[in-house]
Image: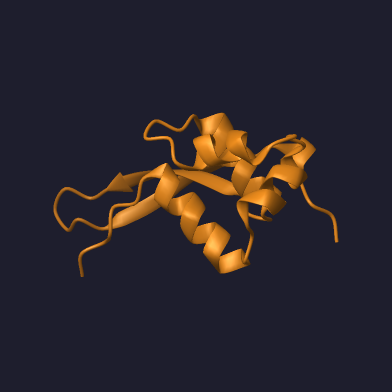
Length: 94
């Protein structure tokens, strides 16, 4: 099975569709005045990790980075460490 390669913009757009979050709603949750700022961030070909994690956090997602080891003989992947990348100031409380 081939995995689809997704850049930051596509991941954000997919999360927005999945969570039914519009750019206007995302703008308000992130504390921006105008939708233009969010639109630029969403459509940026070189999105920063900070922008990426803040937008996902504002929609109720978190970014997890895992270090893995790949067995040279079998190709088996083993997760060895995990870090969370989050923007706590944008966490949405229910």
